[in-house]
Image 1 (tube, helix red, strand yellow):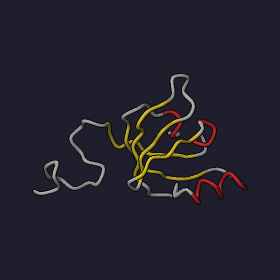
Image 2 (cartoon, helix red, strand yellow):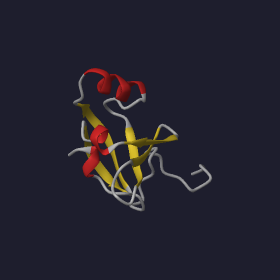
Image 3 (cartoon, one colour):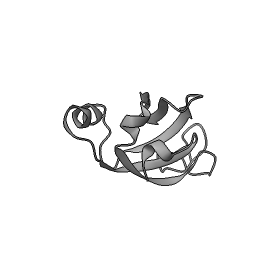
Length: 94
C-alpha cells in the first residue's frame, strides 16, 4: 500500500521508499526510511498535501512524494494502540 492511499487517522510504518535521484535523497533526508512509524494527521481539502507525524514532528508531503513510499497500515487513531507502542495513561505513567 502507498502512503498516498491512506486516510487521516491511519497509522503505519514505512516498508520501502521507491523513489530515484533527488526525490529519493530528499525523502531520506527528511527521515522517511524503512521501519519509521508515522500517523496521517490530515489531508488538504483537495487531497494535496498530506500532513504526517513521525519521530515527534509534523511534516507535509506532496501526494506525488507519498506515492513513492510503500507502507504497512497498522491501525487508526483511536484504536487504543499508542504510536510509541507503549501502554500507559495520558501522562506517561503505567
